[in-house]
Amino acid sequence: MPGTSMHVCFRCGLCRPPREPFLQCPQCGSLNDPERGEFGNCKQCGAVLPPRNLPEPAFCMRVGKPCANPCKQADREPQDASRGCIYHTSTEN
Image (cartoon, rainbow, N blue to C red; front, side, top):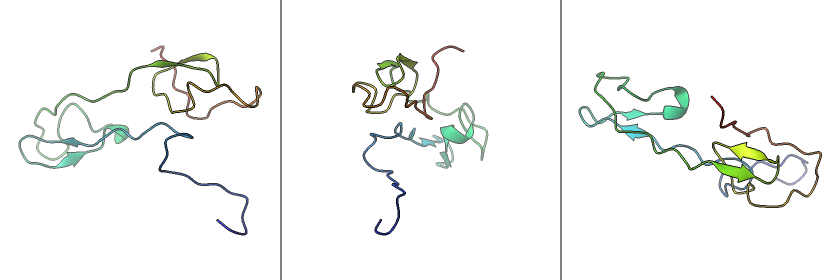
């Protein structure tokens, strides 16, 4: 983005965790977004949806704690130790 200091990236997966794929209802075919809480039962017809495809938790080198939804920076040494991660998801319930 010329002329701005803002960097926006939604493609490589290095700066944020990958999006969870939509769940398609086996009965009516509608798409349900699990990131909006649409899992378990279909928002359209109420049928039982297939199970979510959740990522394996990983130890995040950037924050020094396990992360339930790791991005691709989890296995990289942090360049700035004071920098945290706004997308860090705790593995504790």
